[in-house]
Length: 81
Image 1 (cartoon, rainbow, N blue to C red):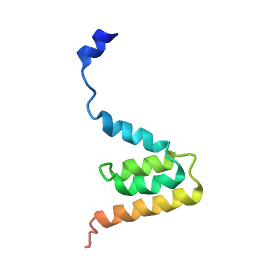
Image 2: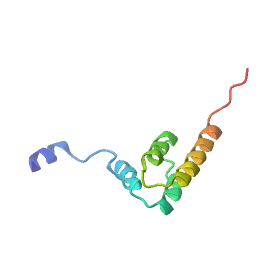
Image 3: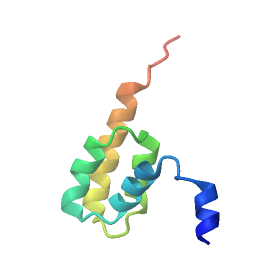
Image 4: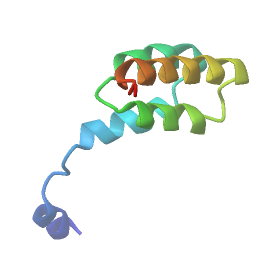
């Protein structure tokens, strides 16, 4: 097994993935700050995380969803004809 791990080498983007997975387990009081601070993840990635967190209250999930929707709208140019 060790030989196999040595041949594979370090995993690319390990910290990026670990941070995202750890965020899933954050308590409700901490997820607000994580969603706002971790802009290296796309809005869709953060939205998916919030949606999948079954331990969040409906109110908290709605607040975060609204925040991310607003962020998405402010980044998306409005096309006028």
